[in-house]
Image (cartoon, rainbow, N blue to C red; front, side, top):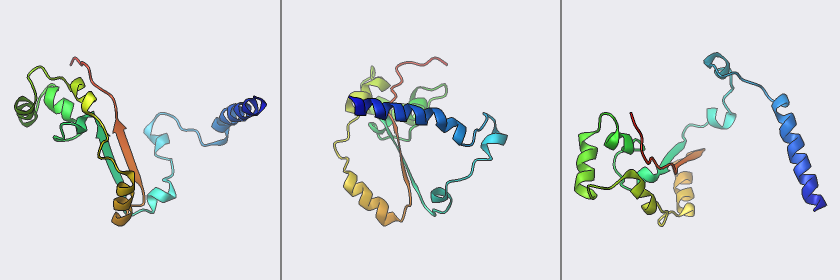
Length: 135
């Protein structure tokens, strides 16, 4: 118990000192544009960004699928796809139960990333389910 208390104390102390030991920025472009690029990013010739979320279930278009289907100006292609593929009462939230990673193989992905020459990989996972929006 004493070890846990000590660790927690050190973490809290570190977190309270951290804001004073690093550069502070204000919420405006002039300040944010002064941030230096990390060397690993700036010196890399190629990187990979992966967007993965509930929108991956229908595997149609992009992470903007919901907007293309139900937004203020729906895409005819997205609407036609949904009408052809899913029941008329289907909602975006219905995709959530089908959002699984049964074919995810991290070792295979790592091999592909390494073979590509990429120096960094960002997996941007969206687990947010849009239940209803009004525009």
